Amino acid sequence: MADLNQILKLGDPRLHQKCAPLEKGELDQALEKARTMAELIAAFRHQYGAGRAMAAPQIGYLKRLIVLNMERPQLLINPVITDKSNEMMELWDDCMSFPNLLVRVKRHQTCRIHYLDEKWQPQACFLEGSMSELLQHEYDHLDGILATQRAIDERSLALSGHLP
Image (cartoon, rainbow, N blue to C red):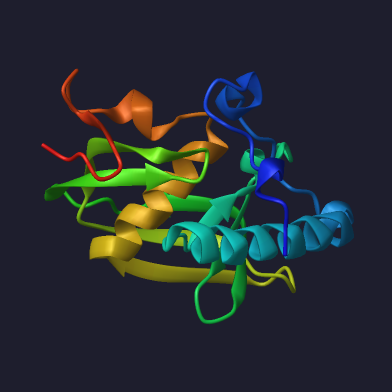
């Protein structure tokens, strides 16, 4: 099983760095990193009962790469979010970089994401609800933004199991 200590934790300055676009010549290295990320997502889900996706900077790989691992691993290379809805949703957000902390945030109810897949082919998906929230969270990581920075107010932090 993957070592969860590979996941950078809140306070690590690398989590606040903006990631560079992935170049096609870096794809082999990115695929190796993506395998590690998929294993870490599965290990995190086994330990914490949550975890569907991870952004590359969470393992110190400062490239624009997101891995979803729900039914199977899926890569989103150089994603761009567009068409964000005006309608917002409030939720308690969690993160693998601070596994016992929840943050109350607002996210767009729907959005569209454009990305390259592992074969470097362009893809696009319309997202709504929990998938929209999830990809906005991971996309923020690529820009060095953590959910803690999106907290609605100073009362929008809670330890797991202690929601107000």
